[in-house]
Image 1 (tube, rainbow, N blue to C red):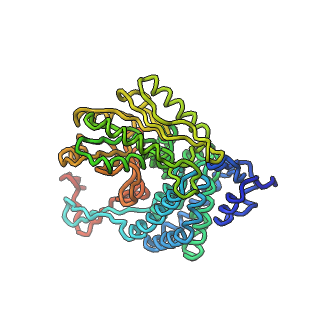
Image 2 (cartoon, rainbow, N blue to C red; image 1 turned 30 degrees about the vertical axis):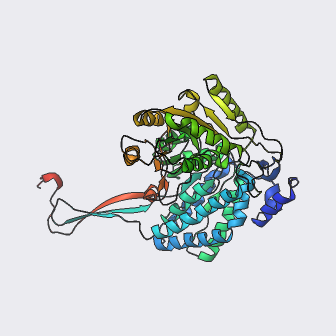
Image 3 (cartoon, one colour; image 1 turned 135 degrees about the vertical axis):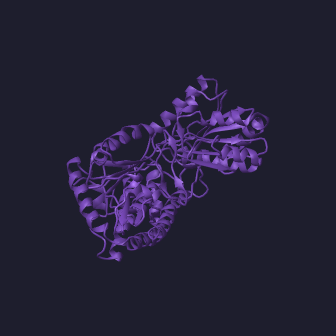
Length: 507
């Protein structure tokens, strides 16, 4: 057994409050560091790739039992999970802050998303509706029903370590599917904390819940690969970069599995001449610098009408200058750390490239005074002459590119001229502009907003986007259908057997 990692007393207290024992945190080789100050907080035992067939077999065994439990009863387990999450909200939120570097309100907000999707899924458990379909043949009845599919693999990213898991898991469970969760190697402690919370819900639920309804596997690409290629994992939900999606999607599709991909975003806001600039500034700053610009829905491109561009940039410079950057645990902090040094390198490279393309950079420097030893930067505002290749690429950092436009058609064309298609918005008080943006000729993104920013989606709507964002949908609306298989059935209750399309076949 290795020694317990030398971490700060504050970090250790957070992990104890979350129910993670010293033994569990010190027996492995996977080093987990907090971006707050760069200190090692755990050394976890990794799941070996040769253990994955057994993990998947246990999930398959759980599926054989769970699929026969009535859906409203399955919903009761998710209801209890929601209750346990409410009780553990502060403890889990603190782990999110410790491990992902989010400010306290964002960490708590992510746990609230988990609670909200549990509430949603509970109601959904009584609404897994099919259809009755009119038959062209007399004496026939057609119907469409939905059935559980099997184990659901969920691969999550560091920036939202728990909410996307909950979007998938809450729905998968009410739909009759066990879950195998591979968290990011950067944020496995949040997953282990959730596993303990889930166990408490199962204990209250009773014997209807089979063993291994939720399994957490800790490790790198090889562990994830086992989920991606297994024919016994019919659903694979993966959140991460577009590059990751390009590797995962074809492999799942090749074996005729169902991929649910939530990938990159290069989200834009159009600010029209009629926009309420006070509201726009608030939305821009939160969307661009929240989570230190490390959200898939972060605002990265600002497309501003030339008549108001100078005024808006001046307001943003002032707002950026007032941001409190530092320890995310401290009250009043708005911008916490980047996840690590490589994120800073990517940010520096993007800013250098933007300058080479004619951009003017405001901010973006290192912050070293009054902060812990993590990687802290000032958000950057970059005035660009047009939408260059650097602007069209997503950089996971607090960089906001500002460009001008003259006509709405020009703005929408610029807005859509990027590989990604996740979230989008327009600030305008002109009804025609708003409706044009939301129409088939407007935003090509999965999420389109008017007079609110692109970041901070509610769970009631389906979350996801098009193009390089992957096309997946999670959370609300009818996203539950992604976790079930559709079956069309025909019943002949007559004494005849007419064939469809008027075909005759007399014997």
